[in-house]
Amino acid sequence: MMSATSTLAMTHLVPLAKELDQNKVTPGVLGFIVFALIGGAVWLLMKSMNKHMKKVDFEEEPEGGQTPAAASSTAARGPKGERTA
Image (cartoon, rainbow, N blue to C red):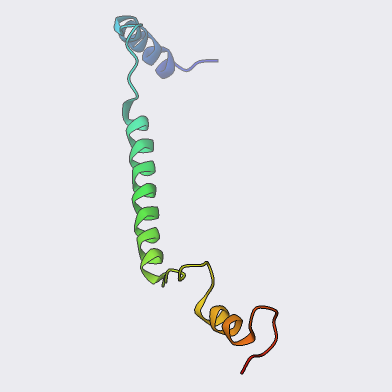
């Protein structure tokens, strides 16, 4: 059962829909809102990543792939693991 208002609305909207170009599709307001939300989320994620990356304290390893503490303990023990000092 359709009310008189919905019937009147349908009779006015159907001709407008016929005038719409069937080969042209536009995203409309909903597409813009979704795109803006995704853009805002990416911006917030990048801002958070920058904050976390500033907290990282990075030091390169010395040549040979050993840390300074491991290199000094290896040098103190000698080639076979015996203490030389």
